[in-house]
Length: 225
Image (tube, rainbow, N blue to C red; front, side, top):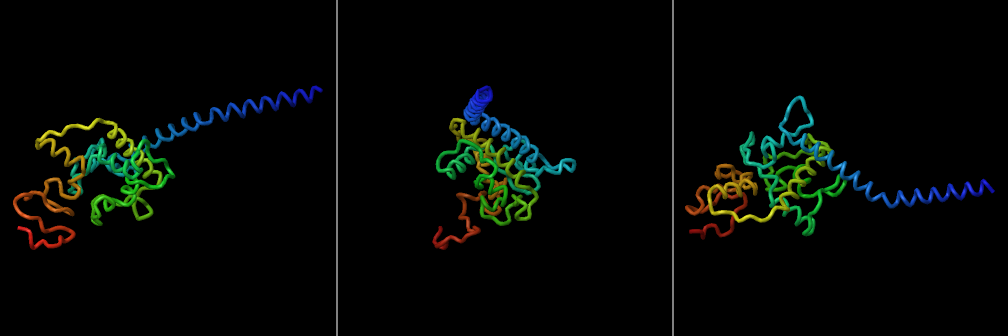
């Protein structure tokens, strides 16, 4: 009789534990994911920093995109790197996600826009095979592992999400405001920081003469006056 009672007690305790574990499992999973995200972001910040021989994991993204990722650094490439805190980046991720971008990509998820640009380089953005933004993935001869790329992806997508929450601003009709838009949109990566052109046409003579030195020829260009 005692054995039977003990068995009932043990089964009841096991059932209660199973029910408690099942009910609290979502919260534990969420906490584990939050911890994973914190670790990813911390590692992403480290990888993003300027290169240093003492820290071999660093990719040196800050050398062109700025120490805080706000862009505008011409750096050793000679081209202006875009702002990674911009709404335009948020909109690209939102469009790729089918109109709703609310959380960063999880490791193991299919690659998205940011992940592809880091893996395969600036050619993903501009189509320029000579883009100064290199392919970073080891699968195509780059220097970054999957974990490092996932960490950078998480960091940049967090910046994009923060930018997407900001209210739209009225852009004043000033040179300074135009320069900020030029940097934020990454125009300088193709048209150069000084508007002289590169992969994209030069913008210095807009309104003065037609631009003809384009990578892809324009049909009926002879009819331009």
